Amino acid sequence: MTAGSADALRAGGGTPLPPPGPPPVLVLGLGNLLLCDDGLGLALLADLSSRASRWAGRAEFVDGGTQGQMLIGWLEGRQSLLILDAVALGAAPGTVHVLEGDEVSASMPGGQLTAHGGNAGDLLRVAALLGETPPHLAIVGIEPGLVKTGQELSTAVRSSLAKAVESACAVLDRLCTPSS
Image (cartoon, rainbow, N blue to C red; front, side, top):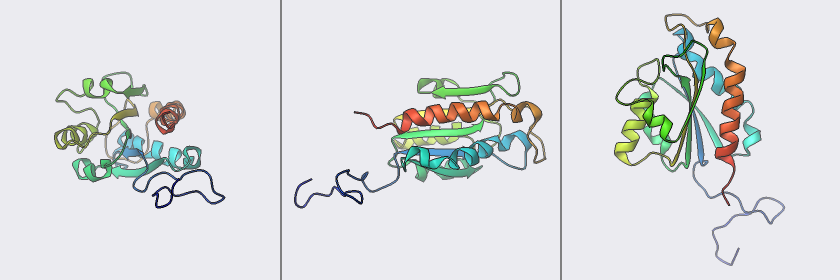
């Protein structure tokens, strides 16, 4: 750090603070709590955000609900995006899906990747058009079994939540590790 430098130091000195602005990683929970398994992204978000200290301020946790394209502003200035959502790829209900990098776009060629309107696929397509796609993308979700009016997750999805949280933590650990 030099005189006039914009680098701020942590209390106690020595270690530079991250630059101002949003944390580099956005964790975005999507879904509708009133449509059974469609709300699983928000259940995953609640669990991950309760562990936020693990990622030392490098991640921001946002409940995106079913806002879809209205969430585009949250992507600005991010290095990474982790989406948590119900992911309908035709597998057995309860299957945990982890999509990263090119797998994300390959999984949504013009179709709907998630179970609800205002989905991750629409958001990512608009982000690409506007040049706002973060360099690192990942989606962790569970294949829904029951998308109808109701607030309870299906048995298949409930039994997969712990595995999905473990997968999301592993992805988030990688995304939040500063590159050297």
